[in-house]
Image (spheres, rainbow, N blue to C red):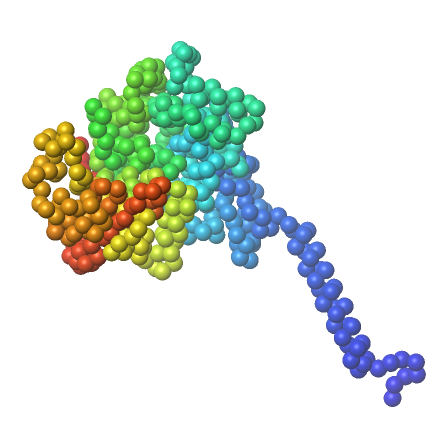
Length: 503
């Protein structure tokens, strides 16, 4: 029997009210726990930031956060001061930040070169991709910058005054320093200023500062801000060489001497750096004065190394100056590992990075080959004919000669009158251009534009092309491409890691 004046707890309304109160109190307790420990799970500063070294309690909180599934963007680093520059000491990124399975880079220093007018457009994607998991990085530019905690060093701040004075190559540099002082956006200086003339002075000073900051690194990998790296393949390549011996590895370019193309990326062993830079701290005094009349700073790197009898080991096409949409796929670009690619936009850097992650997620552990780049990025977009598109065909170009050229202009070794009827008719239309490609057994693709027919013996994708009233039409020999893939047998004959020694 119920007591007088007291309602029984069996009342449905009372039970519901009690349940709501309990839920509310539970949520309030949870809310208090989260926000009294709000540093747990907070994204940590990036690997290039200048912060104090993490404490054991911070590390424990980071581990706790990772166990809860909260993202950790990068590790905390301590700092060491070199002159006026505070450089981050290398630390190993935690496995919880997406770096699981990333190759060991403790013996590698990545040196990335950029320019202030492009840094904000090109560097951020690398912090999320190319440089995300590497052990140690230095970034050089023509203006000191702090990009969200990533230190960017002015590599030209020690160029002698007599080199800069009355030198039009340094007009942009003077403007950049003024913009830096006023806090203005350097990107506004991109148009109308020839950054290339200033860029060539960075290379020698980059060597000097790199060695000053990191004199005892086994491998130095030099990259541009529009270059990406397949780290697993680079690790495999470097494992084949002893950094205690002098090595200079790159993609060969010739300008009086042979040197490694800067945009493609080049690699210098610790022994080579000690010999060429460590013993010669006066390199800038010796070489800066010659740069005004030379086009390319990467050629100076070759000259510095050759002075110590260190010559280029040719790693082309593994170190490559193209990107997925411009690579000329053929037997020379198929069963070779891809280590670097050049001229990539931020979007393309991200796409390559995502492709690598997808392969790992699928358990694919074989080296990333040009064949894989073709199958993923190029093959799905190939068509027999595609309008408003340039596939970059340029091996053979046929267009009618002018009256003055009729007896002098040669088309792949022949005069106009010596061409076949099909070849002479090829510039007239896209249909005729395709027929000319079909008649040439080595032709894999063709491009018709205005009154020109271009054919190509390798496979390139290219991109969309629209220019006023001119029409661009491209096509691919689909059957020949399929036959080529069958002939290559999925690279079952082996992977080509060939690096040609000097000589």
